[in-house]
Image (tube, rainbow, N blue to C red):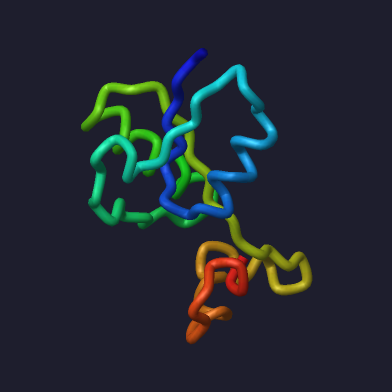
Length: 99
């Protein structure tokens, strides 16, 4: 079985990827590799943020990894809110409500 790190601690995202990849891969979270750092997401795009997370994990843990950053991009709003999508879900207590 191939082991790969998904640069997230979001249990919903983690389970979704595990379901998609099936038993050919052991998909592990940041917590499972001992990473308790809140990895900075300072990119201007969702892609830049995902790349930052994956690069951080590779640089510090030297493991195969991938990352995801999601958000809502509305064409009529020139791509907004984009990387700031989480602000629209502030005050929620559950990841599933924000996702």
